[in-house]
Image: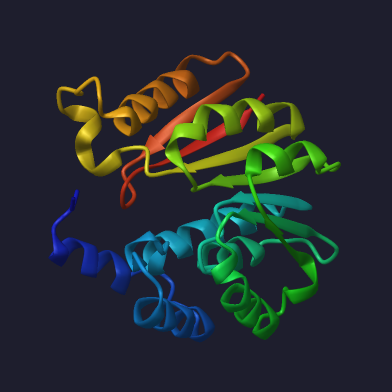
Length: 213
């Protein structure tokens, strides 16, 4: 679902930072070789992730849902010199493609890949995080949030992707449409949880910026 016209979207791209060449190559290879390439963050959202990470200047980043690593590299652009980025995904087939581009970037030694369930992996991570990006299986969004909040530094930022769910959150929700029900419940959780403050931005499929108090 397009929330703005293609013409306006093109104008936005033309007046935002250019997509780095390495990320353009990764985007091209993803579209050529990987199923569901629309899951890629892409140029506009990628530059948003990059500039927000640079503003925060995090020591530790957590990403839930690596896919081919495009958003990982965007987030890594804001890392401090000794900062770390832990990224989690369940798809073993994408590990080599991710690592290929991580190794071509300046952030290779700062990025740690984790393969498996984020529900199981998050409790094993000892550091506290300054920035988290959630872009994985929607049924676990609320579970991820509850696991993450105690592991955030005060003032840390949680980014949640796909929170408009192609506009389905505006439509009458069928009881068997579990993903839309969960996304709607998650949006309400972020709005009402006293531990955080939140703004929902209509970027691509919706991205929420949540600050931990």
